[in-house]
Length: 605
Figure: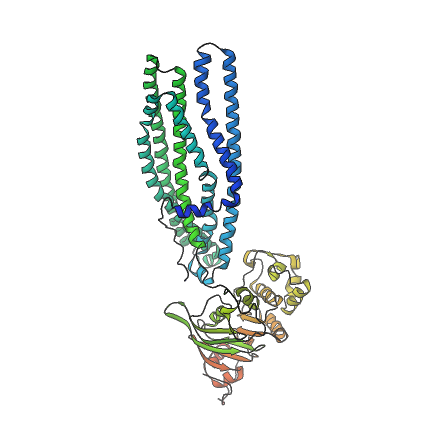
């Protein structure tokens, strides 16, 4: 079963041990770097506890006694300690960020590789912008966890533990005075984490919606402009953007309240130290140096707690992002090669649809009990009104979708028993809506297949009649092609797609409205070449222009998902059925009186 559309409003746990174990598995290949970062963190945390002790020693042992040489030694040691802390902090930051970037690369590659394996139906259900959010925003959130969360927490915990031990060693009563404000601190932190969790979820959801909206509108910008929808789409974007703004403002509000409250609690602790510690200094039970050290430690004590609160927020974001990412990665491809394929690729090229039924959505059949056979080297055309199911036949043959019932056989073997890549390599498809990638003309013909020689590519270009326009390009085969072939006309894009299919030398050639955007003169040139091009190949042609399929060996007429007529061009015209009506509609201004009916040979209703 395929997964449902990815849900951005995941209300998972703030901490999920299962997800965390899975996330930590990405650190395993980088365990040496993680161990080095941990060593840096622990060393830096240990050294960061020393400066207040050095201050206490300087005041009590050297300043109070006027010992300048001892004070100089303490000052030098203080500076060296700070330099060492800086060096360890730098090493920690460098190692963690390099490790985080490498993990991000690996995770993005895993997601992209997985997306490539998913069936077309998955992308029918999931907006591209939302999937882009998985690869970009959600992976960035995990990067923060690896670089500023998981391992860095150890440093904060070590620093807190060290400060607590030193405070109790210096003065137990004063240490308890500081800790009396800790319950208030935990209450503030608990309330904050509950409030900010919801706001972060709203922000992530809003970001995914913005990405989906932008992708759809930028891709369809021409349609938006043609139908003067700029203002309407702008208002829709304003609404989506306002949702993102409100979610961010909510989180900003909580931060604006939380951090001043932390500062207030810290100031309250310092006030307790000054008051209670000052009384102890007057009583002679506490030295002035110890009091100053306590004040410094109180400031350092609340800083890691503040950092831990921030890391908790990073953890919440990472858990939500991890849940979405792993939900995507755990989506099993509904269409995949069998464990033991019976055939790696197509050899002869025979095709048979045997009682095939299919529906994109349950209860709405597109094809119903379709049966026909195409012999190796035979040229068969599929015609019918829009929505008759012609393109669906091609999608099923390429196994973009699996049939609901029935079988599709190639060389007598069910296509579900083929190696999926081998099957698709054996089928060359030229679609009506041609997709070209950013790159050169040659890149779009080869598509990374280095086995296609320059001679083979040029032969395919000549056969597709694409040389005339390629020669006119500035750099010919090395001419850059814009995104989606934006620098070429629709007809030029189709000629390149035609050449691309031929260069890969498939056993089965599928032409889906392949000449719909080509001018009449170019269409005539292609028709002249088709007879030679299709020799030895099985060809399935879909066309609204009936002139392009008149020489097909057989024409199959689809109507409402069923086969209604089969025969040659002349046989179907004499039958005066659906095909004859389609022909009349296209050529009613050019045709003489229709021919008289004649007995059919090879025609089936």
